[in-house]
Image 1 (cartoon, one colour):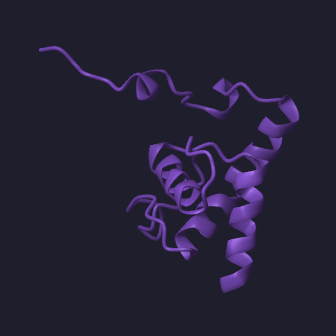
Image 2 (cartoon, helix red, strand yellow; image 1 turned 60 degrees about the vertical axis):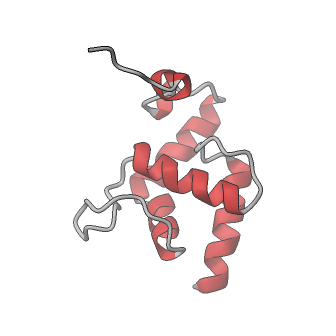
Length: 102
């Protein structure tokens, strides 16, 4: 049985350290993930990031495929490049949208 993969899914980075980014951006991103900031903002903005974690809302302080999917949906809705990567422009827009509902 042959497995079929979309190329981008087969070769996408699995960890922050696998991303081709400046080290300072990787560290900043790791801090946001460790605090659960990104996931909490996505959940509060009604993006689905899974049904696991302590509250069964997808918040588990890891940046996996469900978090990437939520980020992609956010990027799509806000006319950003849809790559699932939480870069500075995506984070700034996410933070702005989150502040509106806070």
